[in-house]
Image (cartoon, rainbow, N blue to C red; front, side, top):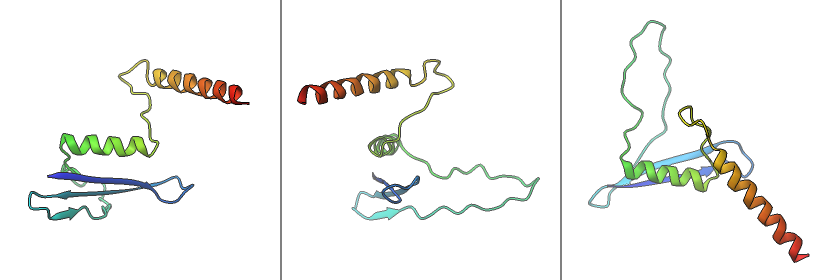
Amino acid sequence: MKPLIMLKRQDLYGPGFELFYGEKDFEGELSIAKPMVLESIPEGSSISHSPLMILDEDSCTTLMNELWVAGIRPTKRLSDPEGSAHIKEEVSWLRGTIDHILKVKR
């Protein structure tokens, strides 16, 4: 099955994103995920361990790519003492390069 994942901003300056998920089966039929519903659970109740979704590796990669294209970047992970320092260095370097190019153009 081929995953179909689309991520888009709710509006141009909005803080939220809309996530759409679907799959085409081998016969080309499209199935889409419907909106999730949160249910209140009384204190002390047992909680089902069913996941919201089960994604294969291709679907996860597609989702990560859509998040990246939308401008979402990873934050520092607890297991990574360097966190996203290398990303900050690259952005700083790129910003400096852009500033230099703009100065040369003037």
